[in-house]
Length: 229
Image (cartoon, rainbow, N blue to C red; front, side):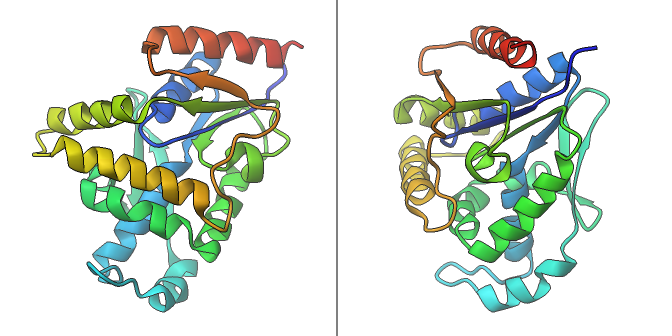
């Protein structure tokens, strides 16, 4: 039997990291963890409790209640990942523009990152895991046998996000989404705690002009090389 490894996939927002990570995990029979969904879940939870207002964040209340926060990730029979907070399914709710506009801000809070990193590391203790996010290869699993850094042109990423939200019936504005993509890039790469950076030993995947099938073929190739060096 092949040895099990840890695969860390990092990169910019709206590059399709989660889609490719999930497909790779299904191919390998590995556990898939979308770390970004966990940060979105915290953001939704804080918004739902009124701790995030239009112009303010009550960080003290968030951190006071953080130890009580229950986040669960489950996989449906169709292979889709569902996100639950205190038993409530919030898979669709965390993909709203309102959450997207706040998540990078919440993810920059050191205590929240430490809280979620500990949970993520626990999930990957037995290897056989594909996890995607912003700091998986640099902070969560620095010893991962395969690290991938995903990037793509901002306009292309905004168009993908625009199409995704429109397909869900949401009324969205392309320029607003593009501004959000650029803003998240800036926040993710400039935050003081665990900024988005390419790990020195990561393989770069630029999918500006790549389709999903081509990306998956490349990732499977890289995974095979890492599993059987």
